[in-house]
Picture 1 (cartoon, rainbow, N blue to C red):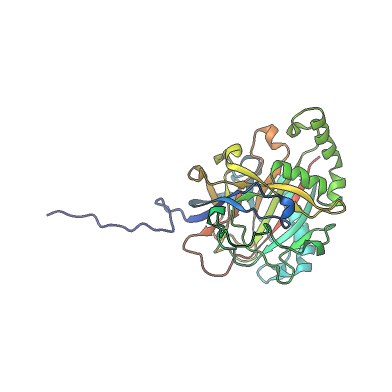
Picture 2 (tube, rainbow, N blue to C red):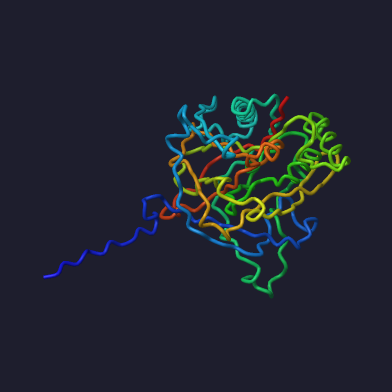
Length: 352
């Protein structure tokens, strides 16, 4: 009498070793589009799109312990516990004025404590409350008879005061959702353009850095080896409710080839006194998705702050990752329910 081993159905929401799966959206941008013809903060038209179910490695609890080895200098991301002076659970962070007056100084202090920076400039806050946009489609799947799309987010930027931190998602019906396509918010050149154009107080504070970078170029040297102060750019973000859906996940930058896997997408941004300018971000392609390592903080709560590095001007010379790809991923099996509620700050840190 033979005995058959019962068939155990594969769990479509977890990898064979039990890790949760998340659908990650990789977009290779169509770089032939003229960014001046796009809206501000242009989400790229997709030349190619890959969706890949990535197993997520849980950073809890190690990232909140003294032995945490996930540091900005080694992985381009880290996290810490922080209790806000605002009643986050009670909803005070949704108040535009309270968020401006309390969250912005707190984000500055958090980043100073983590990085040792002398000065931190907060470019603005982005509050995310709504559903993510539908999955992106590549050019070959678009309706050729449809009117041409105007790439980018149609934000009322001309009504925004660009001399102070902006408050994205706090204005009336202009709610924003998770950023599905995985990316680094600034390419190295994009970070340099931000420094030169974004806001008068930043421009004044970093004038000597820009002069040092320009001097290196004039002398025929690698701009990454300029002789001047260090600066870096980060996202500091926290949940406004415990995260159960659309979490932010981050790719270990040591698991990608920066030259092979990243493509720059240049978009139009509103400047201060100097007017509009162009700055690039880096999109992560999915051609080698299977070799990447992805991380998250399970059930991230309101007192847990995630920090991602966009760019560090000393990283290349020191042989470490200059940024960490990240995005709002679709946690399989948890596609329904209330959208993620979170707030993030884009920051520039300047060092002595």
